[in-house]
Length: 194
Image (tube, rainbow, N blue to C red):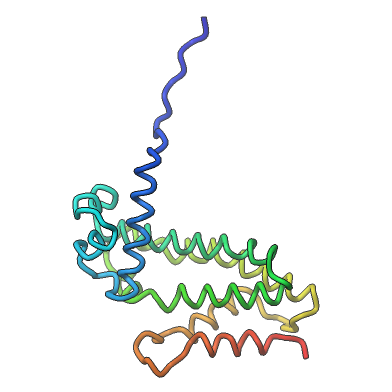
């Protein structure tokens, strides 16, 4: 008779628990856009249609929730790159669309910069996670558009492009007259080969 198998150390979450967590992440992300990362937990719970206890059961601290939302959004942005490259009419179109998603990601992070400078140990690695996930995606899109001959940007690397886009997005939420999306679109248009 075969030896009994050991149960996994971390059993997979039930489907409804994963769905609840996804609902909380989506609700928190939406609330963070309008109210910032310091929004009351009860506002996030109400948006998700759950009690505050459910929020704390999934995310014991605000920092845990902020990190989970941020990582989820970084992952979504990272996963969009290869999908856009496969589906867009051209590598340049994929790059342009992805940078639009990246701008949307950046300009909706009200209060995140301040939260990342807090004493919470779990917030420190977010910048590294951001770079580890998004630099390769941006590099792949930039390389594909270069190889296709659609853009001409000698010496431009993914870090420089992401940093430039980030600088154009800085403070976009503080001035309603400033349109970071338009300026980034102009930057990306400027990469096109004439």
